[in-house]
Image 1 (spheres, rainbow, N blue to C red):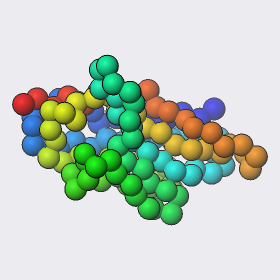
Image 2: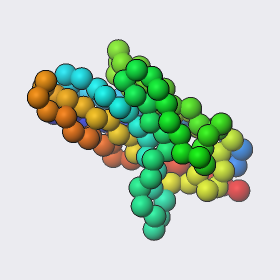
Image 3: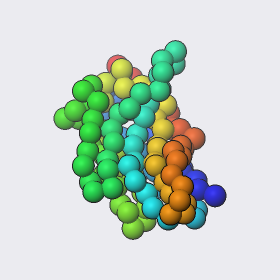
Image 4: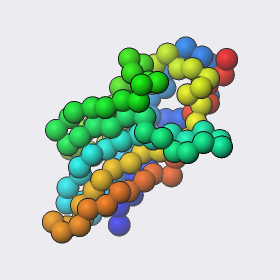
Amino acid sequence: QVQLVESGGGLVQSGGSLRLSCGLSGSIFYIDTMAWYCQAPGNQREMVATISSSGNTNYADSVKGRFTISRDNAKPTVSLQMNSLKPEDTAVYFCNAVISTTPYDRRDYWGQGTQVTVSS
């Protein structure tokens, strides 16, 4: 059974930084795209950043230049360095990965979420 466990959320002042990490465990054959999503109260879950298996990255316009996604395939983990945080970044952040547990399957897995609160 595959598990994704996030850590690193918390309360920070506007302009501050946080680093989120997500560890993957279980019977994993292959990890494709990994990503971070966020969901603020009353809003839909939305993409923050993605990183492909080859390391290509994609960011939401609202975080470009402030957030950096990275991955370590050996551990395996995916991280999100968040700098110059704004109150509007406040949300629950979810780790996501497209994982194959055999050569014949492929599906999305999600972490439980970690709260990020940015005070003004």
